[in-house]
Image (tube, rainbow, N blue to C red; front, side):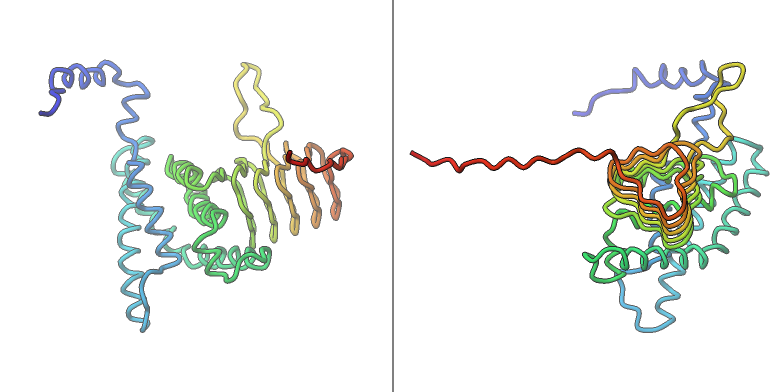
Length: 296
């Protein structure tokens, strides 16, 4: 026998009426998180199709057509709902159509960037046997792939969806990259768990970071009314060919110069000149030899 929920339904429905005009009413317009996850998976399959043998160009085109149809329809429908929170129905539909068209037009460039990211991962990790292994199994690559999708949509001003994509892949991988962060070519996150990259971070080409790295803000400036200033540079700029090792924190609107290496557990809050090595304060390691215990 099923539980009878009907006595509670009317009162719950009326609670939405009581909050009319509030944030809750706008929440009714938000796109489905499940649909956004499905869209993400379709775009990942479109960028790197697999699971089928492509014996001819026609077969590849058929698979890509199937994924593009599903992904573009989900992007259009979700975008239309997201834009509806900001504008009227007609404008929302027009904006969604434009965003979907511009994203599909950018797909070849996004895929080329991701291919270079995967190749950088292969060059940087001797444990990887092939580039395909990076694409198929590395959480860092997945996080960067979804970021490149989300960042392009973010650049179009699309509400909600880029940030939701970010949080979905954050949940999947443990890697948190704000869609506003600007990331150059051949970027590689090794291992990845606990990496945080803030909204106004700028990363150059050929940068490699390890697990636990934070590219974050040092403080949050406020205006005269005590409100947080949101549209200012708060996060670091990482120039080309920089490596940042595990659990380092690079904080504030500083610059880490080209070719520098940031050591594990370093705490960096000032500009670093090019070609520098930054090491945390060393602690002497003591080795104490113990006599083996003899069982009686």
